[in-house]
Image (cartoon, rainbow, N blue to C red; front, side, top):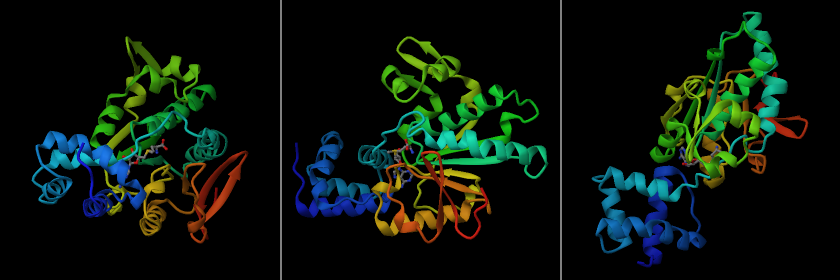
Length: 286
Ligand SMILES: C[S@@+](CC[C@H](N)C(=O)[O-])C[C@H]1O[C@@H](n2cnc3c(N)ncnc32)[C@H](O)[C@@H]1O
């Protein structure tokens, strides 16, 4: 394995931060070296410095995608932390349904920003479907809930779009009711029903980009993504999220173990049972 010099670490660190926002401290030298050494070996190049200049020249798009895949952490599971979906069922869905019945709204838009292999937006789609069925709600179409999942990594999005999961990922966080109702076992994989797959749109999107083309959302899930960003990028990200939230009621979910105190001035923290969600300060209705 090639070793990464301090200069090469700095070059790669700056490249990675510019491309995907992930901030790497010096103690991550080994992580960068180990995660990128396979790409370097395959490239036929002699050093990480050469790899850096190849990436900079932008001649090799596939290599850039491979670096992003290698550096991003795609850890995810079904109904991660559980509480966002309890809040969805117990607080948000009853309110949205009432508003739709009163013709105060026609749809609900939900964004899973940094959705990895799809567990987060699909958990949301399954939760909404089950809620409508359980409560015998027939006058509201499931299509009134538009769910968007985005991620910077093409590889995780391809898995999400396919909606096919192996035995290990299917076990992580999914209870048997959801599994039996929405998945079909096909040998070593579990395939999510087409009905639920069709309720989520996926797209490749870098959270460092402008959000102007995305439209407005009633709920944004941005969970376990910003933890890898610098504080400046985090600040910019949550400022942009405020601007895409439908006001006054738009809500944000972050990861339960994420420290969100830096954004205290812009968001208002709300609690429901053991769960936490955020509204926009000065506007928040829900
Ligand atoms: C740890 S996963 C979290 C997945 C899911 N939100 C959850 O909580 O289970 C973080 C995801 O953020 C994505 N990501 C990292 N940097 C990103 C960026 N700049 N723009 C968009 N997605 C990014 C990664 O590719 C990865 O799939």
